[in-house]
Image (cartoon, rainbow over all chains, first blue to last red; front, side, top):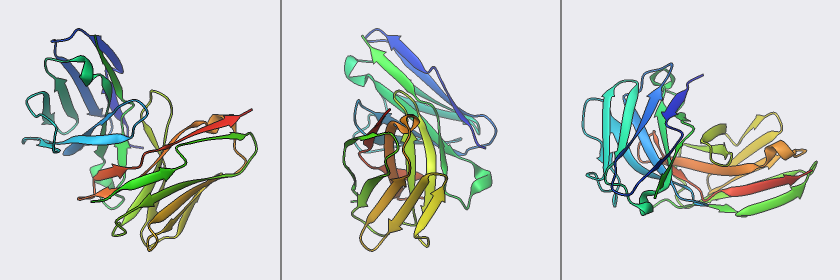
Length: 118
Length: 112
């Protein structure tokens, strides 16, 4: 089945630094990937839609200059949290849809990346 | 605006019991509904996907039902096991086919 890999699975950084999280579709191509954020004991909230070869689409309230998204290939999207602050500490999860399953409307999720900003 | 709610927020049951998790959504114009499992600190695992034309889906000890008209879905877990302990999330498509509205989740604990 379709597999989505995220790296790193967890990261700790100092306030003010930037952190990059990668999302890869291992055995399929994805023109679109999705980035979610999950705060402790809360559900997932969509942050942005990553589009291969074009700009990402951000949800209302999500700062595009703070959360930089790059989708340079059909198998890789990256989320960079710039000038991270403690309030950015969260669990970030990406997802992608296997183009081969166009009729199934099923998203495959990565294992998530836990960011802790000190 | 679609809102997805899950009740209860947390549930503890002894091993072997059958249980039902509930999911409700405010906009019934959906074309499918998914149930996911999330283990602590982990990503999501898709359990069941019900198309709008279906009333239920079964996978092993899991059975999910969908009633679009009333805006409800249930996830039935038979003969619960400690390994079933996790947070269960329901989700419905949002806008395009690929975005999902997630419910608030039910944290299940199965006590040995």
